[in-house]
Image 1 (cartoon, rainbow, N blue to C red):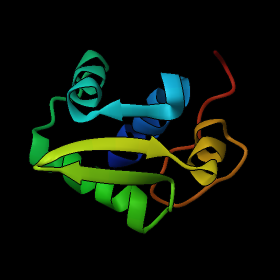
Image 2 (cartoon, one colour; image 1 turned 180 degrees about the vertical axis):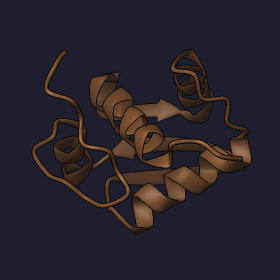
Image 3 (spheres, rainbow, N blue to C red; image 1 turned 45 degrees about the horizontal axis):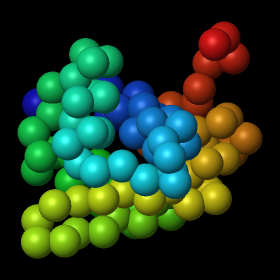
Length: 96
């Protein structure tokens, strides 16, 4: 599947930054991505969450019986707000 992975990762971080408690269930993340034009399956979302956790230390991905809950870290918050940069995560635009 071809899609803008850097943008998807930024959208995930921004959604977590706006969420109550800075955490979201996998289904909420899938819906948010779909609303932004990205139709990912659960397996692909799990790969993106794993990348964000392992390579960026931007989230903590809790897997409870195959259901993932993502929690934002301080690093993830900084990436979501454009206060830090990392190859593999799109930098947010200044507008909006």
